[in-house]
Image (spheres, rainbow, N blue to C red):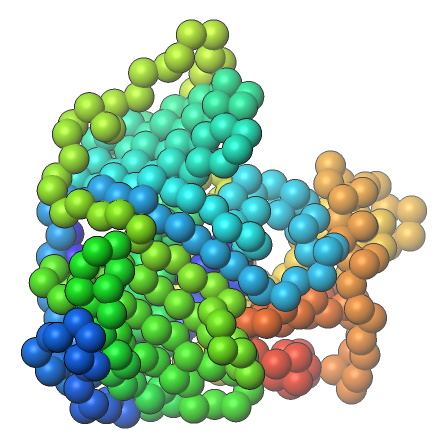
Length: 372
């Protein structure tokens, strides 16, 4: 497997990477050598990028810890509930995941917390999801031409894919200091956006010195010294996991739901436009780190939602959506009016005419895009 799996990473946070330039777009590449602790042969940024692009991975297992401090207001916690995304809680706090990989047809992700475990497994064309708290499971059969399993970003390699796609002439690429991650020596690749409208200060990718696989991924917000988002291995094994790791044996008393066959995306993925902005009423404005996604918001008649008409029948999530929107800051300008959600790394604008604009940008860039 190539480490670069062409996934839209952080899509569970803000789906703003559609339409960004791919690697090789003429970014300014630095040539600083890695630090001396641990001692590693010097590598330029261009060499590390090539290492990452050409790395191959047959198998892997390990423990991954995700940490997020996005500076979200309390009301933002309702967004995931309104969207029905069970992994939305990953946008805040600290979470532990176990991952297993044995090729494109055998993958497993387990999200572990104090109340239970949620698993997502692919074994050939069979995909299982399981929630230990509810003791429920679902199964679906993928089409014969299905590719990698669509899921939440599980590893630093997933996150690195997203960051590398944002490389274009507006990105400075340099080498940071060498370090140790999960007991292994790593180089550090540093991506720095040049556009001042980007809320991303730096992206730091720690590459295993031998396997060239990302072991740590950090995003620093503008003006902050600590990562706003980090995903890193605390333990990693590059041996191919046993086949038993990918077989789902329903526990006693579990309720199993059979999902329709023929769609590789999970329920949460189906609620979002497909990558590249090719869904209906979806477009992108700008490129690279300041790309803004513009889409029509399906409010389902939610009370107080942008575009909702007085007396219109409420949708199934209308009450929850109304709480979310009612708690957001009211904003207006020559582009119109609406409500604004901001964090350390992103801004989201929901306009009264039924649009949603999102990006890793300052609100002013959203207002500019809203004029179009």
